[in-house]
Amino acid sequence: MDRPAKDPRADGGAGLSAYRPNVGVVLASAAGRVWLGRRAGAPGPHNWQFPQGGVDEGEDLLAAALRELKEETGVTSVAFLGRTDGWITYNFPPGHGGDKARKGWRGQRQVWFAFRFEGSDSEIDLEAHGEIEFDAWKWASLEEALEKVVAFKRETYRKVAAAFGPMIAPGAAVSSASGEVGPAPRPRPRPRPAP
Image (cartoon, rainbow, N blue to C red; front, side, top):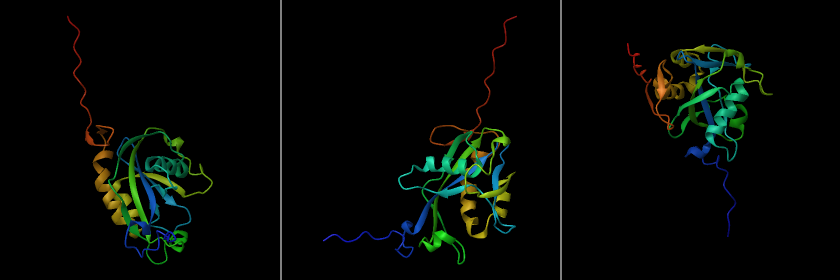
């Protein structure tokens, strides 16, 4: 006899299925600064964060990250730098999580992506999507991102900063399609014209 499918959120937090699938994006400038958005309607001072959002059923994680980045910031001019391995989770504290917590999610599980911004600041459009996530933005250091994010996401941000810090530093270059990071290539000496 077939049993009804169990709601994956109803396992009491025993596994990843209790965490909403989500992607996060660290958008880095050529100068090694990171993009931070101020959450619309959220009280300060810990109301700044990186773009992030839910993954649609069957959606590729990289595609989800690019979609969320475009929806929340208007940005499409990016180069892939790398991604985190596996899921990084955080729990919603009491009183947070809103809709998601009411739907039974314990928190969020995230895969993070790092991209280098290849456009100009005029490309950034916080009203690119119907739902406004951010009401202001700035370029900041990774350290400032850790200080400005809400406390329950801070450990996640520490892990993301550790993973992507070397990738987003000025002069860092992606050395392969897998996102491995190495030093920027050195210019080759050019032959001098013969006298």
